[in-house]
Length: 239
Image (cartoon, rainbow, N blue to C red; front, side, top):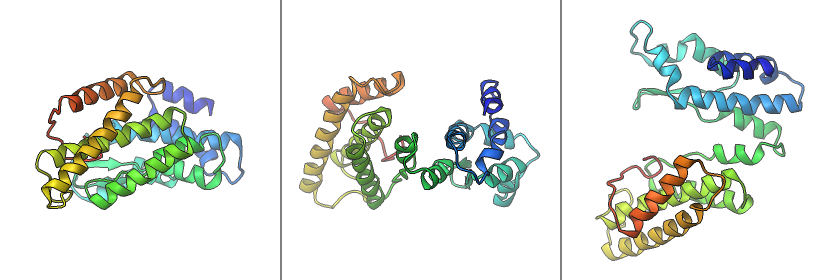
């Protein structure tokens, strides 16, 4: 574990995950293994979320096929450890879906990191109404189960952001996948979404668990909603 943390401190993120292999693949359950799953998730999320791996891959000799993206030795080895990394052709990048945390929850459902793991494994709703509503339902359930804590406020921020974006779409004329086709009905729903977002943003402005960037986002979005500012947002869960 110490070797992995040292490698991580030196920005050798891929090597830091590989150093956890004995614990990630070990049969014996232990506190060290719990820590390894959590650490592997943090590092993998950085490797993919900050485009570190795809940037490195694209510096290799030119390649265009899905098979080659997924056959790269680093991706193969990470996936052997349980990373579950995929490649998104539409975005042209790798995806990480918190597979290490999913394994953590399977093996240690009552572990110390379970509340965080449950939040990060909530699947984003993308741009389909049924999926957005499914994500909102899961986020509300999470906040009810864990009313306090850092991830709880992150969940509230997501709920506020989704409702904010729904208001934006519905208030400014709707968008076919989310509009009912009834202007009055969409208007009433838009106002409900706006009120929900305002209430949550106002609460989050006092949060001790959000980062400075997240607090600024909450403040900016709150001010925008108060003034009915249109942000031209067309991605419900990502913007």
